[in-house]
Length: 67
Image (cartoon, rainbow, N blue to C red; front, side, top):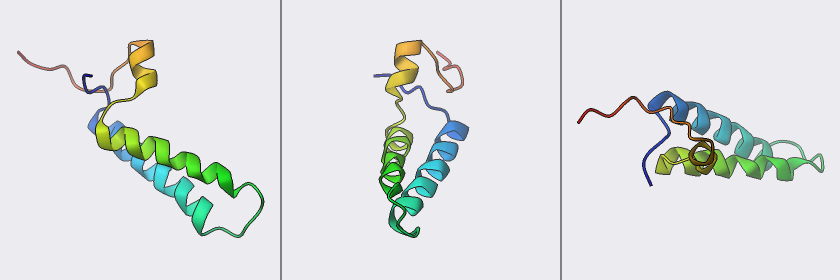
C-alpha cells in the first residue's frame, strides 16, 4: 500500500484521536464514553500513513512524489 496521508493530515488525526481517547478515559461517565474509543482509528491511520477510505476514494494528502 502506498502512503496516502500527508504530514498535516497526520498531525490533525493524532490531535483528534487523542482528544477522543481523552473523552473515553478521563471524562465523567455519561454512557457515551465508548464513542471516544473511535479515536484509535485516526491514531492508527496517522501512524501507518495509510487511510483505507482515501484508497477507496482515490484521494491522497501526500505531496507528489518525485521520480
